[in-house]
Image (cartoon, rainbow, N blue to C red):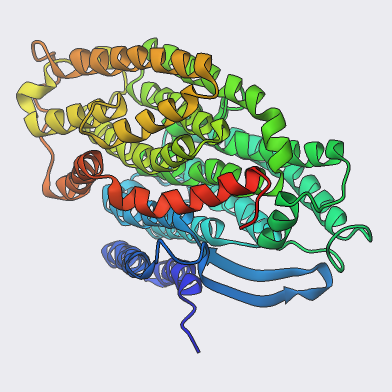
Length: 512
């Protein structure tokens, strides 16, 4: 019997959350160390999967398939392709770093009126990791949906239980937006099941098997009116657009990011929100290839608006953390642009962009969080001259910022370049406008650095200390990844490209 490694992958952090919750309240350091240990173990499993993954082999590997709810035709089916693999690695690399970065975050609030707040904080992060890992590996539509929605619960408590003074309002806004999208998607999931259960369809009864439905859809064998498929596509896409977030469904993100702790905000923007863009590739394009092509021009228009809109609003911000949050809206626009341009280069670039954005945003937001925790203010006007008193903090902030504006030699440049050249051949105007928005990204990042880090040391900034060893243990790996993936992205592209090519073939109406 082969080891069910994908089950081990998501069960391990869930087990870690239980262990952390059971640690005695008087031992917060033990709870934190246990959380980091389980996250490191999950990282080790994901690395082992990456080493064993054959980029030239079957599309889905390490497949597990067991009966779950036979009456509904749904199964516990997990599998990993190149797209899922790189996002699994992103999740498992970031989680232990976020636990270390948020080492004291849980103990800084007393929202739960308990000495166990630190335990709760660490356990919730592990629960989110577990649910995200299921989402990246699920090959059953209903299984994916359940965890896609379930992750809202621990995220709600992470936002609402820890962070800024308006965290409760931000958490409710986050939950209402995403829950509404999820309910619309549930209707589409039920509709998809009804379609597969049709006597005129290719299935003997209803099914939620992603691979079977995608194969039938690619060959035009679902036997359903295109208008019905369009409606189902929009139901899925609506939920994913909110999660991503795509303009104009984005307004929950800035408040949630600013009111969360930095580690929670990064978990949300770099990991959880990637489930939305991943699902566009996995579910929208594969289950509804014809509808994806029909609505692609409209989605691309929204993506380009989001790119420009996010960049312009970032320039006008006076709150450092809110500025960085708006940059993510712009970057998600690039990702969605690449997905729906539907070329091999654009989709490979979009997938790599998910990884690179996760790393660069994590670095920039965490370093900014370390600075804010020292100074006690998010207002850009309160800073100045920080590079003179904290040169390492300022230097790493600069590298992260340059990565965010896609400087050649740093990771996001390669992915952004692939998205733009892959888009240009099919949607030239969209590619030109998106490329022009790069000038705006240079403005908001360099202007932010100038105002915060350069010039004379402003009052109350003299005592700002440099990064300590715990913080360096978080920042240095992120900076290293930005440089390595910027100089040598080939290993990542080697596993992404075959999976992307399979998606392109399916949308062209071919066979797997």
